[in-house]
Length: 338
Image (cartoon, rainbow, N blue to C red; front, side, top):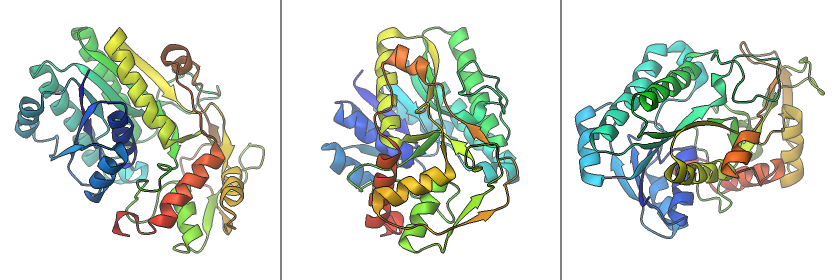
């Protein structure tokens, strides 16, 4: 495999994966409609990769434009990140999430099939799992997403499984991420949320810069060691490397696969705060707030299948994540606007 198309490649995880792929020798071309990303990331991706990464501004919902893209670029494989991703927004505007996430995937796979490109790595999510008493979560755990965002991911997984069963020439991997954090160690690319961050670490780094007064910790009465929610955090560079490994696996072995991507360890909100303070020598003011509706006490991955089949496992710890997240935020306090 030589040429890879990365949809949503200017976003948080996509940009890091594009760098890893280009450094591994792939010819990388990015497709993005810039609805939740920044064109200024492109130059930094090429800079870090040490080679030009081409860019196509395009909305995958436009089937004719997507078909023309494949006619023009003739990629060997696709990594599909493009889609809307805010859980809260999906609850308030479910129609948009179903239209964009499902529609763009159908348009993409239609163009892929028409042009003989059947290798696809899909950016799925641990939100496809039902609230489950079994921890850590294996890929066989009960599925049942709790919000429209998670349901779009689960529906896309089912669409891709049906594609494979209808035509086994497809080579498909669905990667279920847990909680991606951190940034490229250079501090040149990182998470660039618009408005108030939805996730813990970007909010925490904005408190560290003084953009936010304090961090709200939602609930300290969960049945966890310190009462705060426990999640499986994974460094975005470990995650990016997993996409490259999954792509290589598909090229060699084919088939249809689902893998959890996580560390296999749970960390509480208070542990993340402590790790950030220790890694960066910065005090983080926080206040306990009521639980948020829909939040669960804990979930973390069983990543043993990815280790066994891909030979992949995380190599960066929570301190690395906190250090690199702060390096990005400190150097880019207003994201790519800095």
